[in-house]
Image 1 (cartoon, helix red, strand yellow):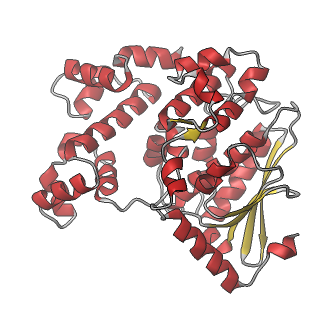
Image 2 (cartoon, rainbow, N blue to C red):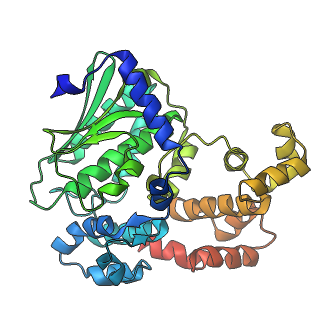
Length: 367
């Protein structure tokens, strides 16, 4: 079977070109539809571990802002923010970031610790190998292995499934998370040549082109991501602060494809994230760094569906959430760092973003 899929370098490059063309085809209705949310069948599958543990899945859905009846409609799609809320609640109740699929739970912070372990690696190869070793230390029934064969690399994901649960969604999720997280680490989309899957097509297989934008083959002997080995030499370009920002946005940031973002919105976000205080950077400063005028920058942001204030508020929210979760910094000091004139203004803004005051949000997270 391996020989059947192995082709010449020319064929591999053609596959990559096909994948890239499919990735950016915004006129394809399938991609537009997938962008609206996640199919209810996939969301239901994510609840497998919670259901096996005896959790009230109906209440989990309601608390996540999802109407349980939506999961009964095969055409329904659930917003990614609601799905992220559901996953967080499920992990919190189970005290397990694997969602109840592993024999030995992944305690809260397991994925973050793996990220910190990998970020100091010099290149993608070393990072993937380190992630494999990390997983072997925290899991007895999940194994991730990197195999190189000429110009082809395979990331093999094997789950022995000691709990005997329907585990397809779990294996798929691990594959998607690894693909998107490690693409982010090198700031380059890892273009897959193909994906082999050791199970039949699921009810939500129409979303596979969004999950794995390349050819995928079901009912194979193993589950693996196949890509060109040239990616393995690419250096990791992220630092600890960027990782912290990324983790503060998880799992939302892992529910969409990673793409190197060279939009004006993306570049401005990165500039703001690097500031000790957001107010240190004005629109005029940003325009100068981007070699354009403030008027042109405002126009370009409008074309991207954004504004200077919207971007600032988005970055403020992400930074506030991270600092409230990870640090002992006083709320008043966080407000000052984020450029609010007084703590009360920050309190109002944060409650608008999350529904909770900063102190209540911190207390809820700690509890």
